[in-house]
Length: 406
Image 1 (spheres, one colour):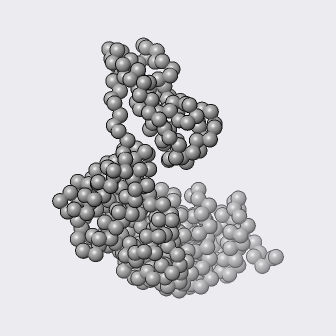
Image 2: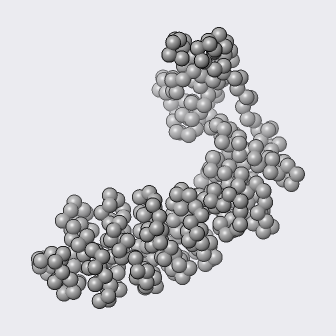
């Protein structure tokens, strides 16, 4: 490829590679189809990359057959230089083909095959995903999962349906409509979490990612209807470690979304969420975002007496909380200090205060006090120091200053 000059008009202005499927936009510029569709549909751009003129998402992209044939001919002539021939692109996915596959989904003889084909089409390119979305395929996938739940059967095709929903996301308004029309969607997804399935890690991770998207759009009425079983199933997948990092992050996000309601916090404490969150922090190597989520949930749960009791019942709780503070995340610092403040204010027994000295909590808080942190956090630390100075004052790590001034 280095030994031959490629004609400039064969090169896509976006990818800077030889075009495989050249299409011309309404602005008159030709791009490789995959690149311009990614620019429009995935990145949500509405201007032409070259001319900067308006280029709406629903713009026609006209196949440039003449240019494609020229590129194919040139590639064939220069095969000796290691240039591969560009295959003729497949015809674009259309409504007729999609409707045929949706019809086959309702027939048990063809169901798995149609689900597999729809998944492959979704994975292929942005153009397909747009067509599948416009023809209501995401809704059909969700209803397939609900039907499996109603029958109590893990049918072949569940993995493909969940995988499809990773590629083609259900739009916000459609999520809200589906939730208002069918009250079994959340139950269907948590049922998958508690079921025996092949390729368990992938399937359950995909299920909880879809669950996160739906729980994000739930109103307070739906969140108030959640039952203990909902949280039990999420706790079980956390306990058994059957999730990818993205799946774990999504499961924690689901719990955090449910925290604002007091009844949900109580149910989460009762089913053992606090213990599992601490175990995640103690045993798993994971990204910073996961600690931010666990600390966010723990803050909510420690706002009630039972939550604080469960927190302090775990012998590693204060130690892991202390260790995570000041490790580069302002969110973790914020939630960590607020959790310690709740413990300090409502649950500060002599044993707890001694533990905070023993594992370095007091020392870490003093370092935080001296650092570049928000005033409200420093005020929380000062409140803790003032409240327990009589217990901590003889420790070498305790600052020898008056906490009663100002």
